[in-house]
Length: 392
Image (cartoon, rainbow, N blue to C red; front, side):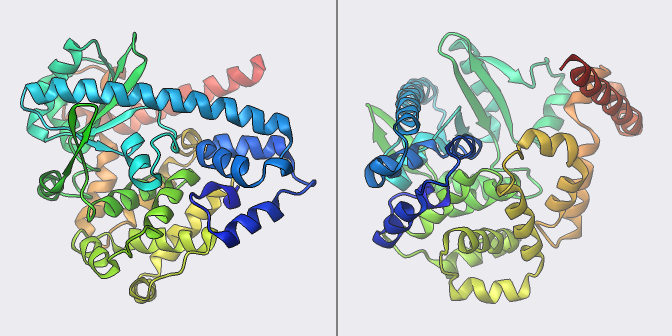
């Protein structure tokens, strides 16, 4: 899995990949790992280029069919990105594409070498309401949160969370509209606005699209990977490919940027994982950081455990490791105010607004009722799991 996940491979890595393709491989398990880590495009490209005669034909054929479906999906998503960008530009709203096909084009030189289930679009916070009107006019429906929001709920959601999700039932495209790179207590709104101001423009199919600047790209990769505990190998591959890019990274500059954000631990975590799994050298700048941030070792070990777990998924993390995940995220920064905000952020969840609708005037009651609503949700979850076991 590791030998075939990167792109493009160096000569010694090609030899290692070929040596790994031996008769003892359980190809069905390998196929499941490829799906679990969302690494099909690069895995298929490497195996079909460097190990054709070493992989069972039915495995390679199955990968080829799915890689073609992914390519078609990426082209469909790109076409929708161009369409939406033109619509928004006509209303004076700038979108900045995050991750997805444009990231694959940037890192791998091929937009189809990365899987994408949706479009992640960054937007100025002040333009969210106008953007929603435009998306609804384009045929999209808001699916998360699907409920109508009261004015107070809208303000609270925008303060503590970072995106709305929309789906087009005819075009079968999902869009995540982000008004923040992550929670505002992790990256301030002022810093986010500066990132948007530094976004660079690229031309595609007659549209003027925007992507994060070269200095902000690794910051976004590290934050996204750490937030999700790096459970998908494809996210680490993104960062490793950036590390191995044609231009040597400005490690001092990146260390300073992450330090200004209070997120140096995330840099150390990402570099450690890149070293452990892909033997990427640790820069001297980060070696000194590792010595001063022992918590990063804990964070990297936690991520490694999840990466190597064949069955681990984000859904399992939400169900069974919720409290542990909150504790993990509280270690992102040393700042005590951040830790408190990271804890209280989960005290007023939108799911409770659906379970127990209250008028805006009574909204503070959610903080008092939270323990009871949580117990009720856990009881329903256990009953659902028990019913599923009986049914199966």
